[in-house]
Amino acid sequence: MASATILQTERIDLRELTPDDAQAVFELNADPEVLRFTGDVAFASLDDARRFLETYSDYRRNGFGRWAAVLRESGAFLGWCGLKRDASGEVDIGYRLLRAHWGRGYATEAARACVRHGFDVHALECIVGRAAEDNSASLRVLAKCGLSYWKRVELEGLGSALVYRALRGNSLATRDAQ
Image (cartoon, rainbow, N blue to C red):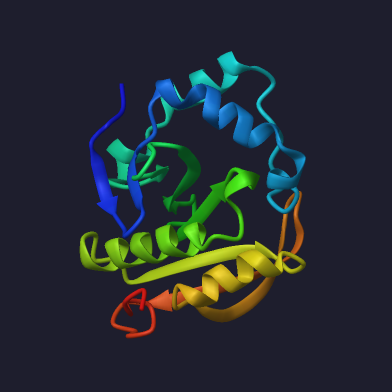
């Protein structure tokens, strides 16, 4: 059963991921090109994807998390997008889309809405985005969401990555999609 919509953009509904999304999430993470710059590994089975979704606790713990991104017009699962608080307390914007939906502006549209939501609804002071240095498409999405280059870091499984960030009150971070 699909959960209620948390955010809407012009074309996308963002809602909590549920165990019913297991097949779509399994397929998303099974594509080596989707995982190429993430440092993640594919789920070993559909049951593993379902168990992950059944135990995903970010919504309860933080009031936000990675949300299912669904095309409003057709109900098609695009992937996920949302905010995540890491062990250090930093909140990052992340997104992952099925390859069939790349290059259509969906990641930027969804991520921009999530950044605004983080500042406006959750009163976050800072939102970061991390991407492999070679992942130019993801770096462009971060910039289009109003995040600016902050620093270079080494991430386990990923190598050299760039960290972008936006601070609360920064007009670039909350600008409209226009």
